[in-house]
Image (cartoon, rainbow, N blue to C red; front, side):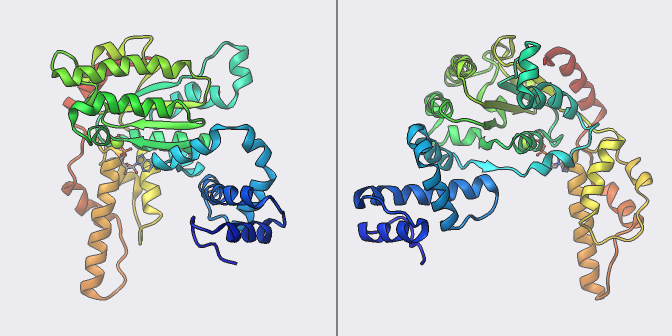
Length: 359
Ligand SMILES: Nc1ncnc2c1ncn2[C@@H]1O[C@H](COP(=O)(O)OP(=O)(O)O)[C@@H](O)[C@H]1O
Ligand SMILES: [Mg+2]
C-alpha cells in the first residue's frame, strides 16, 4: 500500500494504520495519528540519515506513542526543525579534520568532552559552554567546524544567515532575532549557527540606530539561552572580530571566543589527501607540494583542487586519453591560486588572538 501524502480521508488513514501497524484505534484518533506518523517518518529519516519506510515509522510511532503523548513539545519541535531547515551532519566529518588543525583540540576538550562525559564534567565542576564565537580569516574552516561539532554530537544543525534575519527589511532585524531565539529555546540537542556575525552585531560606534537595536537584542537573548535547561549550542562566526560590538565580547556574554587560524603542515596534508583521494591522480610528490602552500587556507586548497581537476578534465577532453594529475599539474596550478593569508593578515590575526581569545 502506498501513502499518498498528508491528505487522506478518515477511512484511508484508518486503513493505512491497520495495514502497517496491525493495530486498531478509534477512527477519530486514527485520523489524527496519520499526519503525525508521516511527520515521524520524516523525523526518523533525518535522524538516521536514511529514508525510513512507512512501516518502520508507523511501528516506531506506535511503540513510542505514550512517550510522545507525554512530551507535548515533540510535535511543535518537529515543525520547528522543519521550518528552520535543520540537518543531521554525518559523524565522520569530525574525523576528516586533522588533530593539529586549530582549534580541533580546544573544541574537543572544551566543548565535546564536557558534553559527552557529563558526569565527569559535573564531578569537576566543568560547565559545558552554550554560546561560542569562532573568529579567524575567511576560509579557515569556521563553518566546517560547526558542522563537524553537530555531527560528532549527533545534534541537529541549524544555520541562520544574517540575510534571513534581514529578509523583511533591516528594521525588522531585532524583532526577527527575538522571534528566532524564542523558537530556538524550545529545541533540544541542536547547534544553532549564525554566520557573518559582524553583519548583525557591528560595533555600536559605527552602527546606525537599527544595528544598535539588534546588538541590544543579542545582549538580552544570550543570557536567556544560558538559562535554558536544554542541550543547545549557539555558535556565531566572524571573519572580522574587531567589528563585533565590544559589549558582546565581554566576559559573561559568550562563554567562549575561539580563534580558527592557519594550518600547519600536518593540517594541510590531511586536507590535501582528502581531496587527492577523489582526484584522477598519478605520482604526486606531496611533501614538495605542501611545502609550497604555507599560506593556504582549507578554502584555498579546495580551490586549488577545483582548478587542477578542471584542467585534467579539459586535457582529457581535448586529447581523448586518460589524464592523470601529477606533481607537474600542481606545480603549474599553484602559482595561479593566490593564498588568502598574507603576512599582514596573519599578523592581525595574532593580535586578535591575544586580545579576544577566551575559553
Ligand atoms: N578539515 C577540512 N577538511 C576538508 N575540507 C575542509 C576542512 N576544513 C575546511 N574545509 C573546506 O574548506 C572550505 C572553507 O571552509 P569554511 O568552513 O567555509 O571556512 P570559513 O567558514 O572559515 O570561511 C570549505 O569548502 C570546507 O569544505
Ligand atoms: Mg563560513
